[in-house]
Length: 225
Ligand SMILES: Nc1ncnc2c1ncn2[C@@H]1O[C@H](COP(=O)(O)OP(=O)(O)OP(=O)(O)O)[C@@H](O)[C@H]1O
Image 1 (cartoon, rainbow, N blue to C red):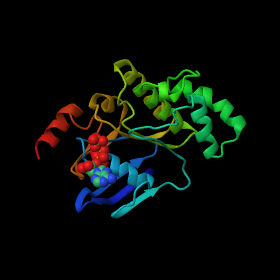
Image 2 (image 1 turned 180 degrees about the horizontal axis):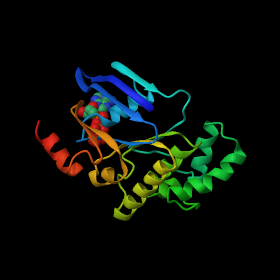
Image 3 (image 1 turned 135 degrees about the vertical axis):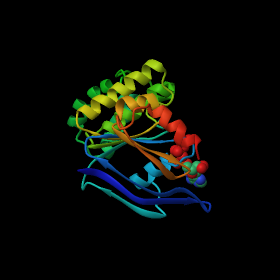
């Protein structure tokens, strides 16, 4: 069953077509990757799926009434709040009752690999911000998670932990769309994905479909056009 499908998605910026008729479907319970070089159109695609920017063509169809969690490429939170306070704030925007939030927040911080400390966001490292962005995306137990570069800025161990967390979320039944440049991570966690170049779909990747690594496929597809 599809969780989400995009048909002929299009985005034009300054007369330039940066997403050019993309069509793909994400099935319920899978981890799906959007792959491509810098400027390929991955974040723009995510923003159209979320309705953050208008489409210049095409459709996005989602399962009805699903909750979506979103971790943006460059997370920003109020600098004078600590992690817990950030989650309380976003939880209140979602109308999650205070009592429920109190129960959820320590588990969410823990799951994202953050301590429930008084450290304010202004003193967070880039990696801590990424972790907080993931915890924020998990508020309200969404069915679909959209993670834009979730391991950007994390050190090697942090990256491994982040990918383990994402894998465990998939095992819990969440559907996950990930935008990432780290092909080894994608290969370990994702089931399927698409390679995009200059807004065009180049290749539909599926784990185990080919007897070569995602990196080899990526280099061939991206380098060969
Ligand atoms: N608001 C905007 N106005 C004009 N051009 C934009 C805007 N946002 C994105 N673009 C352009 O659209 C193209 C696709 O950008 P996008 O951010 O979707 O790429 P990406 O694949 O996510 O890249 P990266 O991996 O570097 O994040 C780029 O050429 C970018 O410069």
